[in-house]
Image 1: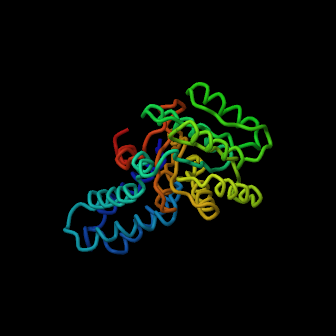
Image 2: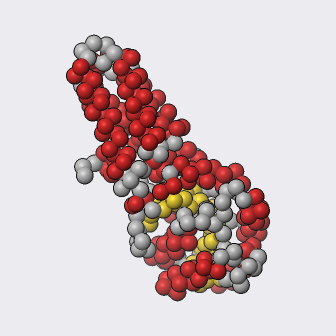
Image 3: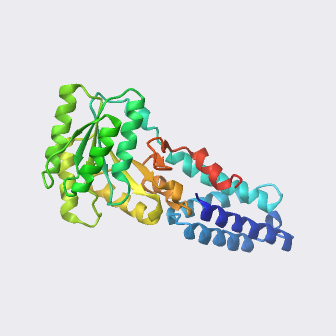
Length: 305
């Protein structure tokens, strides 16, 4: 994973090293004009890796701060450290502690999941139910994506495997009614969590977005989580922004990170929308949804192959 991002960063570092060998003047052995050229190369490399422009600018600015007034030394080493520090700062700000967050309120704790079709939302819900169950919590899943019979069937299979209660209505039923019934069931049976699946809406579909607002009004969720597909790059970021405008999101789960060679979405999404990245999906198994940690991603960008 992140092979493309790693390759682009290393290419930019090699250009810096070559420039340091060619020029023996100016700051750090490179003229200020050359530094601007190299930062431009780095910007292009990051944009090609689907890193959001806002994040690219933040990285460039932090690197420039480190360069100004720093002691004379090998330019490659200096810029490499500055780049790593800049990316680390961004990733650290993106970290979210889901399990600490959910301890704050009384049970049942209601979580609403939003995202577009194909993002892996239903599977992400099942994985989270598995993790919560491992920690001793009880869950109810609400199959509130009533627009697709396949979504209900998929959740049924997961719920059966996990031994988790599923609340469903018929295909085409009112999604808000499904969410309401799931919450009432959780209260009656003293369940800890209600996980509400919603239809995979394109962020441009006004009618379906209104339906999602209705679910939010009825369910009054404690947490709204956006589930995005890492493979869609900047599209996932734009989707998250739109969902945040419509219903407000409190955190992110990024799926299919294991298949993402570029890495731009994982680097950018949480920082760009100013919401925590709670989990990332790194495989198909129930255990393959892990809490996001900055050091984990740094190792995969800057570590050895």
